[in-house]
Length: 438
Image 1 (cartoon, rainbow, N blue to C red):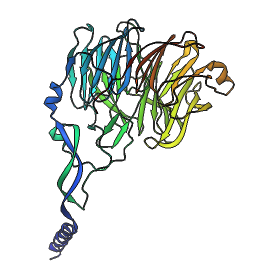
Image 2 (tube, helix red, strand yellow; image 1 turned 90 degrees about the horizontal axis):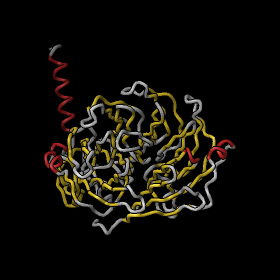
Image 3 (cartoon, one colour; image 1 turned 90 degrees about the vertical axis):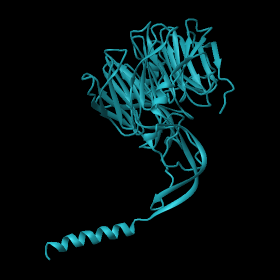
Image 4 (cartoon, rainbow, N blue to C red; image 1 turned 60 degrees about the vertical axis):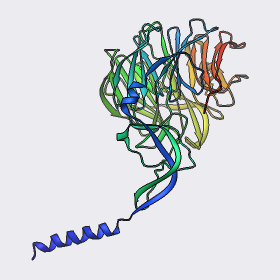
């Protein structure tokens, strides 16, 4: 009896738990997932004729070409040999695409959970040459926030869209409809973490035709023979790209929670996160080592670096959390003890870019236009920061400045400016967004 009693007690407790467990069938209106099978996702890659820009986001300059991400749909290929007359050449249809990087004549692009590689050495004959399957976390496209999300089954494929319909589900404890603490900024919604984050990177010198430069909102960054790619809100996937035609996933490293931006400068990695800028040493390539941090209130924040200064935009709103909107200048001359030395109030900052050789910084400040900061060296030395008396009157999302040539992407299209004379910046060309279906 002494041996049997504990078994009977466990059985009774288990039965009690079953009785306490409440299951019900409920019918409600929800965002019901529309699936694309993994096989169809792989078959969806197509090189098509030029298309109008609709929701342009990430931008990448490589040699005489520009690659512009169309949010969640693919990449526009622009011949920019003559910035005064850019030519929209092709559209690479890539479902779920958010990020871009170029290395030695190969283009890397995410497609939902996959990393796809394209051979672009002959821009007139772009071909897909490699696919790394399910290397990024399961992601979801934007949905109607007025309704919850119905149950999702990743085994059916990726969620390519939604339909708001009546659904019937069997729920436990009345827990029908999935909800997320969503930080939404027209980027990427991570399924199992519930964050639609944003990111950034910086100058990346590749060995394609000339210099390759990423906009500050990129989530991909290449240093030597390693591609770093934010794969979740706390992890960075590490790919060996010594064979540029087919990256090899070599591991994943957990950095900070809520990571958004990646920027490399010399042998250091600067990571923008929701709570600050974190600095890592890249000497061991596939094993970044933590050095120090500059912390701030919760916000969205891309970062760029030149010499011993880091420039960090802090945006606080309903999507990012917090309420501060400003540009911080951080002294990193002592890399283990970064300190704030100047700041400037902004309205709603997004991407930024620095041309250190010409001592000028461009900051996209939402509907307030692009702020221009000149004479940075003297201003920062004095512990102050003042923007120029004028701005480029355009809603900017991200910028790439290159020795007098500014490439600007915004909600209304692609703009290119000549800023060789900072007192008389000239518009060279624009490709406006079209009338696109919702």
